Length: 322
Ligand code: GTP
Ligand code: MG
Image (tube, rainbow, N blue to C red; front, side, top):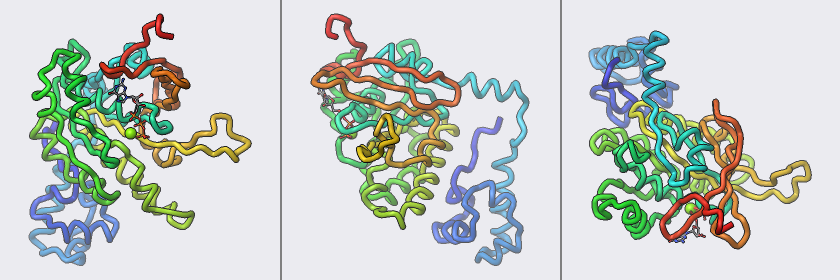
């Protein structure tokens, strides 16, 4: 299989931001779509003829492998790695931990442990495979300024990892707006490769989108952007055999008499369809115990798992504590 693939328009040879933007305006949003463009179309879009033909062939070469044998596909599937959450029960619910080549979305109300799980996974991904890690680094995109290095230190210590090394292997960026957040993902491939990132975290995936796109009339645009953003995240996860973890707040809809759960993910259906595994978190009142419910997954059965958040991080519940 081919090693290097162009993921974004900007990766194509000689592609400036302006040209890439122009292509997107014209509807060529992916490398695949450029591969099927004609010379005349790109010249009309403002490319020099020679450059246009170079870009098209690069795009075509990049997507050369469209057909794989079932056996090759099986090889790709068996290369799926898993990261332990720290709780054996939660891992079991997820089919052995958070998987690579997909998005796992944790959603729930405030304080249900979404960010704590992100911190824990950013440490756990660094563990050797025999301990449930992928011996890799984590990319941490933080949109709510809730990342805490000192929490990484205590989690790393508990696992017997060197705290400084653990912090060195978490590559952090704060996302200031939804556009900035999208840009961070668009530009992430280089750093993912350089640092050996095996886990991409976006905490929170939806907060900026929710606060920036208000009202019914902006809903369609918001969903479209969110959809695009999530597709990019999935593509990165697939291209680098990395796990992607996103968090999503839920809002209560107490007036919805038809609802049994009364919580809805902010991103609505878009987020639901693109992400592969969706896990609803809820608190058990007054305790550190949390309940995770797998809501949808391409192949895992629905179910629930109990875990807790302690000084050490995410752990199984000791039966005596319950
Ligand atoms: P929002 O981002 O507000 O939607 O919430 P969240 O789901 O991200 O919640 P978060 O992961 O921040 O969980 C917060 C909870 O984790 C706290 O209420 C504590 O119960 C627990 N927690 C966080 N830090 C610590 C810690 O250092 N020690 C212990 N024992 N628990 C902690
Ligand atoms: Mg949080």
